[in-house]
Structures are given as structure tokens and as C-alpha cells.
Image (tube, rainbow, N blue to C red):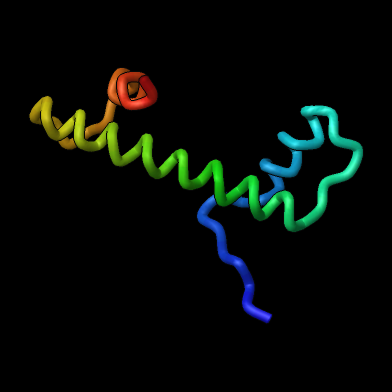
Length: 70
């Protein structure tokens, strides 16, 4: 069986689900939640990098992230 390797640890995602009111969370649910949130984070970071580059910077600033989310 192949291991699903994630960039971000899964424990924080499990805590988010548990803190949201779940009594128990399956490993598959944690994996799915991790995949969805990681995809969203990658989209935002790509947009923020393009915004910073357009502004003539190599560094992504807070405003770039906020603008990328909108």
C-alpha cells in the first residue's frame, strides 16, 4: 500500500475538524480535507506570486495574499 505524502502535517487538519464539532474523524476524511485545503492554498499562493511579480517584487507580502483571495 502506497503512503499518501502531504506537504502539511495531517494532525492540524484533524484538529480543525474535531474543533468544528465532530466527535470522530476517519483517516479518509482527514486525507480528503487535507487535499482540498492544500489545493486551495496552492491556488492562492500561485496568484499571490503573480501579483508580487507584477508589482516588480520577488517577495510575497500580506497584501498580495489578501488580494489573491478576493
